[in-house]
Image (cartoon, rainbow, N blue to C red; front, side):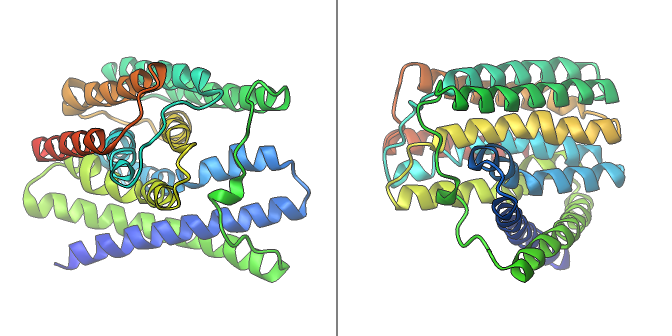
Length: 312
């Protein structure tokens, strides 16, 4: 029971600390007169992946590669089936967004690259460096394309980040609080997840793929549900694609540069293929401009439920 409560506490701290860090960072960037485009494409995009980053780093330092890798694979599956499926129960989710084509290609290429890298486990520092170069190139393209109006509209990041602090003291408190809270939340999450795995006789990989992955994907889920509630889900699929790209290239890439990560054979034989299928599902929906309606949302949630049950 204590491990479950600690896990819940860790996930709650991660969600709030990540939110506070992003809001503080946006407030600081606005004070420094940084281009709003850069703020939206980097700080805000990174913000929802902050919980995954700190959990994966903590797991790597603790020698629990199963949680570090499982967290990312599970999060990318969760982002598609749960984060897109649940809001579809409230409103029809459009799968057409300007400028999404290149992002979809990058997501699939990164997914395939990661699969090849995981096949030759462990994920090495060279693998991580390659992924970091990919994310740097992707961000550079996004900025260049937006400035040349290849992307017809860049969403206002204030739609995703509310109540940005403008007072110096409040900005400082938000940033410092986020930087302190994220590692604490990550430590609580990893320690309790490891304890739960031992308690129930499950592997750390299984816990990482399910409980931890869903927990660290809560920021994306909350953002999507709020957008659906406000009937403003036009950029929802773009957020999912962007999050999946960041998870692979920045989070897993950055973690493996610091510490090489062993990959559980279970992920190689099963879960990375589910991740690929989820990525291709998004590509298909976007390519044929198929909106995700209630029936589609229910199908996604059913598939997600079956996957979670099958993992256990």
